[in-house]
Image (cartoon, rainbow, N blue to C red; front, side):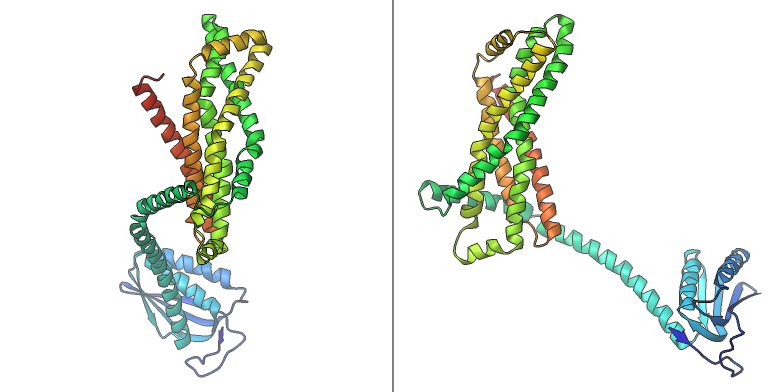
Length: 391
């Protein structure tokens, strides 16, 4: 923006005039006069900033600053920026700023820039207030929606048992393949390394008592009781639970779920039930597989580091697992872990927002909530088993 006003003597813009700042002190007030030509291309602008800093140091004890432009003959947006920064700097120092004899256009732009800043500050406060209000409004839904979802799944399960469900068996088989066979490589790696690590750690401690052979007992009992089901649960939460949330969230984003409802097809029966049942059935099988692989990891350490024979190691493992409840307890927990992962993943996907950012949050939330519930459920099971003296 460029303006070419007349000065007080009536002559127009003169190319020889330079931007000027003049300072006058009178009593308890400071009078600052701006004159000359103010242009973005003016090479004297850095010097003017230094001069302004010098003015501020000289007048730090004054409270009132009068700013005028009585001899201004040319200005563009460089003067607007300079004045706005100067006024804000004075106001931050608790100074009173009085503007006098400013061109109408300059006054309007200064007021507009002030309103824009105030509007931005108000907008941030309003956004915060809206977020708080939304959280307070949605708080009941954090408890109501999960209950409604669980109820809908139970109803869909009852319809399936009565043969009235729209669930397709092909979907169930495909979900079982993704939850089961496709997860074998990562379950194998994690379980083997878990058994390997427990054997190494246990051998260091048991060697102090000359009882290294009990490494077989340690690894086998830890895998079938806790680590097998827990590691499979965590793996499936990060792998399959996130996948369910992403699939269903993307369907909601593309309005495919709304289309199912339009055709009278229950999304719970058609989408949620096959995934949840597949994970419910595959997780115990993966847990048994993880138990075996973890024991083989301990065997690797026993035979290669501790010089046990494989037959001796297996005999010790067999004697440690004479009570089959040790195995059943881990499988029982894995059933509930699979149910938790399937329900949470599908719930987060079905209730995600309708944009890509909300979909990402839903996937992350599905993993975090699933793992949290798995740890809590594992602790509850152990407490119940100990209270019932099943250990």
